[in-house]
Image 1 (cartoon, rainbow, N blue to C red):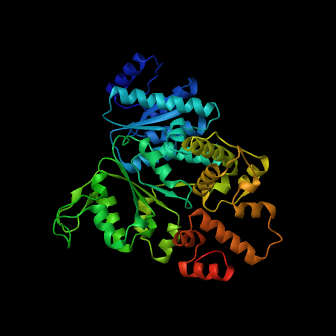
Image 2: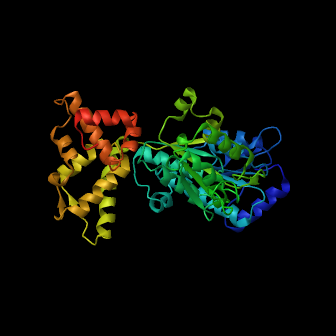
Image 3: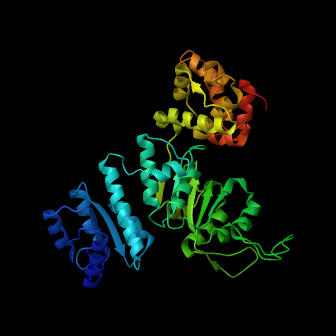
Amino acid sequence: MDDSPETLELLERNLKSEGYDVFTAAGVSEAIALLDETHADLVITDYKMPKSSGMDLIRYVRENLRNTEVMMITGYATVEGAVEAIKAGAEEYLTKPFTDEELFAAVRTALEKLKLRIAGQDRIPESIKSRYGLLGESDAMRQVYGAIAKAALTPATVLITGQSGTGKELVARAIHYSSKRASAPFVPVNCGGIPESLLESELFGYVKGAFTGAIESRAGFFQTADGGTIFLDEVSETSLAMQVKLLRVLQEKEICMVGSTQPRKVNVRILAATNKDLLGLVKKGSFREDLFYRLNVIEIAIPRLRDRAEDIILLVRHFARKFAAEVEKSEPRFSDKALSILRNYAWPGNVRELENVIHSLVVMTDSDTIDVPDLPDLMRYTGAREDGLHRTLDEVEALHIRNVLASVGGNKTRAAEILGIDRKTLREKMKRLQTGPL
């Protein structure tokens, strides 16, 4: 559907040349009347229309036609327009002018998504699952796959939330490599791992003489990512002063190198991630509200591993196969009891902890079968005590602290973050509960 006869004629001719049956309408009311009489697998609509807009047609299709996909084309490309179209139900979003091949590719993608949905597969792109390390068939992960596919269609900023070890960077990579920026750089930055005094120069670069030791100019991560995507992991760890600078990048699409007064334009998509409650930090005054809403155009929440327990056995076998191949061993089998304990364990470190445990089991176990005695002590203890109703409160607390410490390789700073306490409190608890070396 388009209000331009020339555009309608061009689309009709090109699509018919590819073997598609095409019907055209010059407005929303005509399109609705046509859809009431004729089934269409795909509706292609312009955004700006006289009287009713293309958004009205998208909503009509989504509310009335179960087995019809929608693709929007527009000459007025904005992040807000793309987000609005995707939220309303458009599966593809094309900006004018586009090539014939871009049109055909978008149509093929939309129709393939329709086939998957009809087949009950809930639009899970196989490339996302297999190419970027994301595994799982649970409803929770299916929602994540769908969110990734939609986020890849738009240049909007994405905030990825979830506990440590859930795979936030994998999701960011999946979005980037499924988007039109896939051939450009993907630059991950751990904001919590760079000292505050160095973060600005690392992100934005610096000019010669900007500070002692700056003997030459150096580009920062934003320049490195130009044309592609920058992933700001642990964005909650940035200071309020740095948040002001990030807000400027989002608003003005430009950076200023340390020691320079001349801003530079950058073409970078920003993906951000946090394991903390950013809205809670906003209310406490430690995170800027305007930056939060700029980052949170699209939010993808990654589920905890224990909230998708049906995926655990799939992940166990995947990691066992992977690490067995690395050490040139045959893939081990797991006893039913061992699998039961692995499935019912709380996994405070999420998928990263599971991966580390399976890696250790594959390397350290000599038998072809991994059984309960081969599992880490803390898991055997959990399995033996079943629901833990016979433990004291101190025992439960000590066990949980051990589990968290094990999941992060003994890193007390990371463990304290997961537990929601400061490092000093963790040290005091470890001393009182005798959970291990300080």
